[in-house]
Amino acid sequence: MENGKKTMLTGLQPSGDLHIGNYFGALKPFADIYADYESYLMVVDYHALTSLRDPEALRKNTKEVVRDYIAAGIDPEKAVIFKQSDVPAHTELAWIFDCLVTVPFLSQGHAYKDKIAKGLEPNAGLFTYPMLMAADILLYDTDVVPVGEDQRQHIEYAREAASKFNKAFAPLFKEPKEMILKGVGVVPGTDGQKMSKSYKNTIPLFGSRDDIAKAVMGIVTDSSGDRPENVYAIHKLVKSEDELAAFYEEKKGKYKDLKEALIDDLDAFLAPMREKRAAITDDEVARVLASGKEKARAASEAKMQAVRKAVGVN
Image (cartoon, rainbow, N blue to C red; front, side):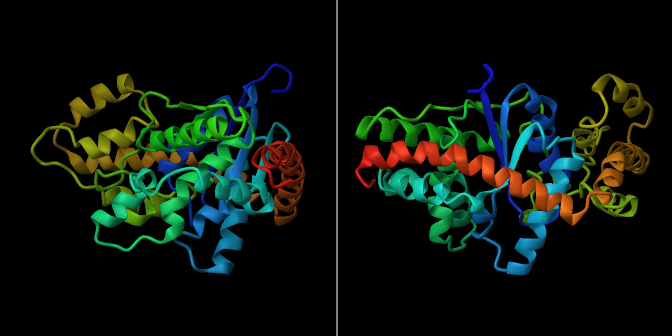
């Protein structure tokens, strides 16, 4: 804790173009408050390896995520923006945590259970994913982690890893708290499920107006009521419910009109970020990551020296 500020950490996978669920679920909550904390912002490229098998795409996506952070309002001078793979301590600490938790404990992970339920074979990385995420969080004495409601379990896992280590070896880790902003936790996709690239139900964050229109027109509407709930749930992310109430009453049952209004409002909201992002150069991205690497390594190595001593490998 520096200057009396608490520490906050969050991260995004470089697994492809960001969608508005990423923004409202993680980026915006972080951008709104990060300057009040000692803030760490990761590009979690090792996490992406659980599903991405394209090295060129991973390299490209990593740079794009840094652009996304900056375009969304993050000042690199006020937050440590870094790449997970640039800090070896993350995977080192994750292995130590893997040796402290049980297989039944990890088998309760939502991502793992979701794959099983869908009849898919999860890889070992997905199975142990929660302990790498715990290492991400605990390395920096993180006080709070802004997450969606559906990610609350990750923070519970981090607290469990901290508790098990503290009891087994030495009280080195702070147990973090999740920060879930009301109404932001889970952003719905065009089909009403959680917005996710894997469900192909996303609205692009930095897409053109035409891209937005195509996605919005594909939103599944419930014909049983006067208000299409999937459209409304997304609309209230960019306009207040008070603003929307009279309009939705006036356009009751007119789903096409409501979708067109949503396209207009989303485009107006996203256009300034699109323009800012387009102006960010590769050189600027490289400078940001080089600076973040240096700061994150210094902080994490200090913690790992104490960890190695505690477990007996120093």
